[in-house]
Image (cartoon, rainbow, N blue to C red):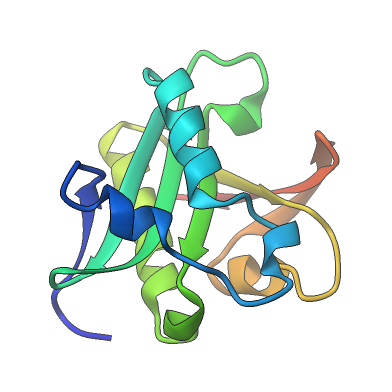
Length: 151
């Protein structure tokens, strides 16, 4: 992992690279493809915060958060919505960087917690999120396990 890591807005210049990101086989059951996320970002434009994860000029991943402080369901007020890191880039710290960047954005917006949820199952992202300080709340929303992290 290099020191040139940053998040970038998804633009006409990088959207093709973002859409070409592919996960490891089997991970697709845990996270939707980037094209679905971008469609949701378009539909939920006031809430969605989509970003390319970049190492220098190269797109290595995609992350999307949602910020809707007045939402009736607490986990949807400030949440990590999607995280896709290219298969050949996983295990190098890019996902951790992206999550920390979302946490920083949430703090900048005055949030005190960040939520994430996932489909349960072997090979799922639970150990990754627990290593980053997320704790399972015991809630299940839309069939997904909910976890939170204090900021």
